[in-house]
Length: 129
Image (cartoon, rainbow, N blue to C red; front, top):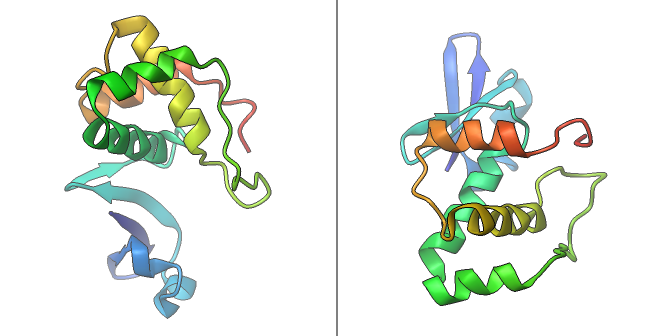
């Protein structure tokens, strides 16, 4: 996973896991996109990238039965989430999984574009920071 920053000479790509400590971050310009598996994700909708990777992690790590258990819950929370520092939350991704399961009966194999469109149609943005 990468963060992509605009730099005067073009794009500066920093590997995400190291980017928070990379000194180039402070003079590399504005964040332009996130890159995951050779695909660039837009910054708008604000949470679409992290929602995508959180859901992909569940889909790739849980069994079908474990994923279906999410349908048994109506409320989700992140113990470590701090809205003053972040807008991305695994709880929202879990709620999206519940929504997808209710609508499709499984987690669909969305392309990046299809996921972004679904996100735009089903996530309320005016409440996000």
